[in-house]
Length: 333
Ligand code: NAI
Image (cartoon, rainbow, N blue to C red; front, side, top):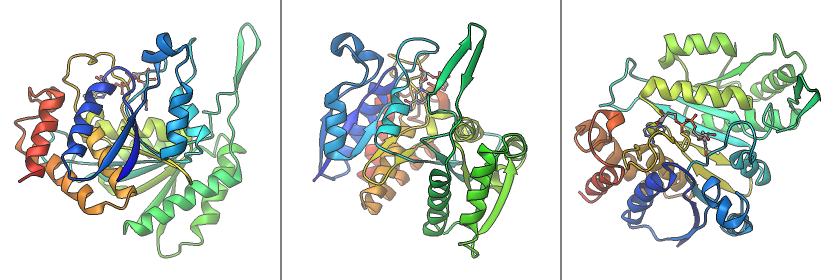
């Protein structure tokens, strides 16, 4: 029996979460869910976006399946996502992006894994104004966190029989911060002579990714570049409805899709549940349930390949739950 915290979140969160939990509950795996919520939707009732019961549940269960949480631009509350990643020291954001047969996209054969440093860079939230017209943001990079994430990328590459790790950086301009990240990456790479190591300045990396995405393998990079690169790569494989993710730390892990709360789709029951279902498969891998994870992936890929019971982003007309139900049919075949 696994005790898992579920955070439905905002916008399409409750809808895709319903789909993913339905699939997991039909996978013949015993899960005791502790459903708590955070985000914009709980502020009115609880008085704040991250209630204590959420923190308590994560502290106890240490494994979380999470929907997206809205972060209003400008004022209001700070990002709950960033807060959770920092508080539980979830230093590695792992986002596998693959071409799924059946999805209409200009590309095929994409199979990259983005490993994003998740706690530092420009996401420290330390910003201040020196006068009315001047704002500063602090970009924090430490050797310890940089070596830790690059080490994570190499260990991941070895474990998953990957061949190459590419470090994206902007050390030509940010000589001290990205310079330190790059220096740390080189240091760690030397310990893995059997894996190929490559460096690319992030803007050139983006261009090469768009021209030849199938050339890339495991990517490691500071926080902001990883955030941007994730959405860009999602676009290459058919959209945000398809890309899963995991936030991994030493003592806890929060599994969430790359996409956000998609206010444009919220409440329509048409959001693609694939990203969160594949995220659930990453969670099963983490729990050691590799066989179940594989069954789940195969079922999702078959539904997408058939192309009938898929959501509108994949040119179908299925509802979020309808697509999840179809996945369960393939699980039970
Ligand atoms: P978004 O990822 O919510 O949406 C971008 C585009 O992708 C939209 O056109 C949306 O309809 C589409 N999309 C997203 N998920 C989809 C799905 N499952 N199926 C089909 N189409 C999908 O990004 P946006 O609009 O920039 O952000 C909305 C809110 O979400 C913001 O408040 C942002 O801060 C928050 N956010 C939260 C994240 C998290 O909780 N981990 C991650 C990213 C954004």
